[in-house]
Length: 147
Image (cartoon, one colour):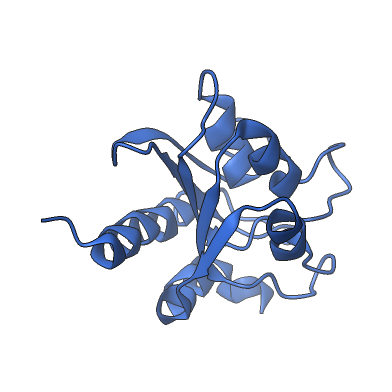
């Protein structure tokens, strides 16, 4: 029998591990993201600055998906951004547009570069949010130089 809480933790741990692959930056967080389908299988993964210096993790992962993600969950080491200067749409809006109806994250975005508003955007759009603060320290590790 599947344990949804254990599955959430395992996928979020993977997202935190992906954040360690990010090229270092002094102007952006290192974040990892995994998109998991309603069937519990991985659809895509990504990390910040994976292919472009301005890529965010959720954006990189979502760019690898095809079609409607209804029923999918996005796992992100950091709360998806609600505002960004480098691209027209923040990750929270990209997630809403994708059809994913659930987001699990470890760490609330600190107000270092911008005010974190991703959770509010997602909630207003009816996306279910689950925060696993027990993994926040793990999500902060690749960002220690910024804190």
